[in-house]
Length: 212
Ligand code: AMP
Image 1 (cartoon, rainbow, N blue to C red):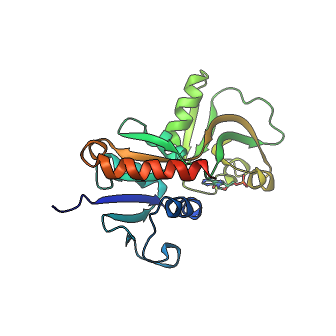
Image 2 (cartoon, helix red, strand yellow):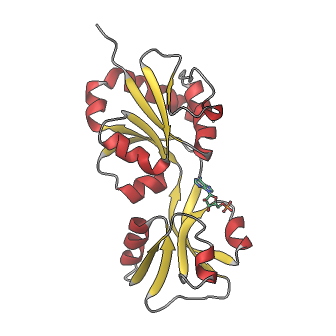
Image 3 (cartoon, rainbow, N blue to C red):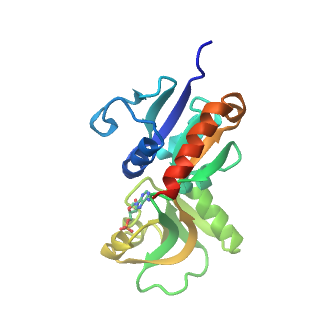
């Protein structure tokens, strides 16, 4: 019988640095140094496990549609994408940060119809709707911190870790929207059809997280 093969979608960038040691502790090691390679698809020490390395925003799509069986992605991208299309069985407790609103230091309470720049339009829309606030969304892909000083927005919704990036750009964090960490997500059909291997990897990852 052909062994069931699974494909794991990892998020590239800073999450990857913290993800690889956890997979290593769980016994899944890529056959070459992912960080040094321009390849996107990697074999591993396990014959039946391959890995791809893609943008976080794309991991939920690959997993929901079953192109990847399992993914590692920040909760920010899960919240933005919507949590319905896959299971989220494990919090890896890595790449912790927060999604927050932020605005210029001098601003106290933002009132009226506020212009909000963000990479996360769905999260921002939901948050302000839950507060009963009307906003105008400005979708940007990066350097959000510039938007208030250049008059493009009154506030931003962005990832905050130490808060230094905000501070360096004359902004301060205001409201906490969600605490973020990286999660393992699993395609719903794969969880049934490839349950043995997926459960085994999840169990070992769970142990690795406990040992952190
Ligand atoms: P900081 O200056 O430490 O608050 O870092 C803020 C910037 O770093 C944000 O604009 C994010 O782009 C990035 N960042 C920090 N932590 C994370 C994370 N866990 N995942 C993704 N991006 C992050």
